[in-house]
Length: 478
Image 1 (cartoon, rainbow, N blue to C red):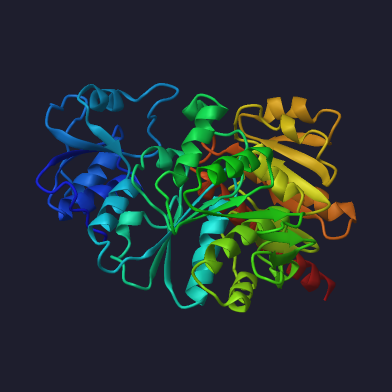
Image 2: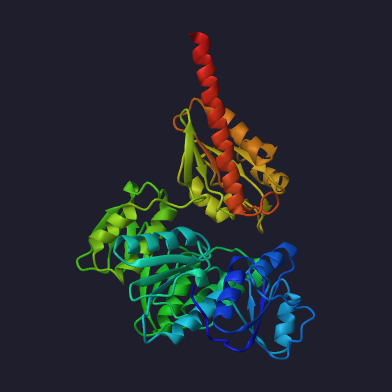
């Protein structure tokens, strides 16, 4: 555990007792803070109490002497309106922080000791894959790299650092909003498309939250910025104009005079002189598609700052095993391939998956984001047929009319069965049944992982049934 001593002997409120909230409470208690925790969910409170975390109803508490409110990132801070507990904290001028900020303050306490490397990763899409890829590369090259934040373990549950530790932190805009003093050695910004606007008010608010990842950087720090969309190009220009940290641009499909880039699947180091070919990303089986090439370019740019062996970095990229629920290959039935991309919770993320395959039988739908899948119209040529699930099904049907053949499946298991039936009967070469929902999962599942696990289990059942049928047919023929 990383123990936070920043609030020793002070009263601290913790609201939201999910993974990060429980971790923050334990870290603060170990550091001598007087913790008062609460969650609206009775089961979450019971779990906290079992873990010896003191509870207090923060709606009724006296806030006059709280030193801080540690807020779970899922709790509204400003939009669509501040949570009542947030309002109480603001009324009493109590600072509002997240678990990553506690981590940052703990690092500041030990900066003269075993100072680790810190890499922070943000963007709209690709954060989890890039975070995991960076950690994989660094581990392959001999460091003790820990992927954390919005992926894997809660950051305060990780071991205290040594001189060989690297923390690779996936940071959502919600987490950045609650982080004030983190000074990453490398900050990575992947891409930006409209998302979470309900939590940030508008696009300007979303951009403002995301770009704060660079605010504490200074001389000797690095900002890796992918410049493949208009938003990140403008951000790169603005951050460069500040002249605080060194900027490393990265791109896919275009050569950069100075930067890291990918052309026709080949990764190049354009900062080295002469420009050096690093690896052919088409050989990285867990990184299909141009969006994953962007992730690989950013990961290489971030790790070349720490590790000088470019050849070793390139080999590590090719050995990356991939992540669950991100273009995860979950098996085949006959010549039909099944891909679990449950993490694609918006249209832009789904487009990456749709661009990576041909002959797609697409399972799509759930709890829709703003504008649904309207941005995908005109870009669905690889889709043979779509199977609509969840509360967005009717709206998506209207969007797809005249674009793509589709049917209303409702439930995921029914969509998988129908897509498998049609793919097997199609006679096309290498058809793909793709779960890439372009939606949040909360209408039918607890989260995207629950949805992806359900897809995987359904495919496994179909595969087992197919094998049983084949065996029965063989016995009958005998």
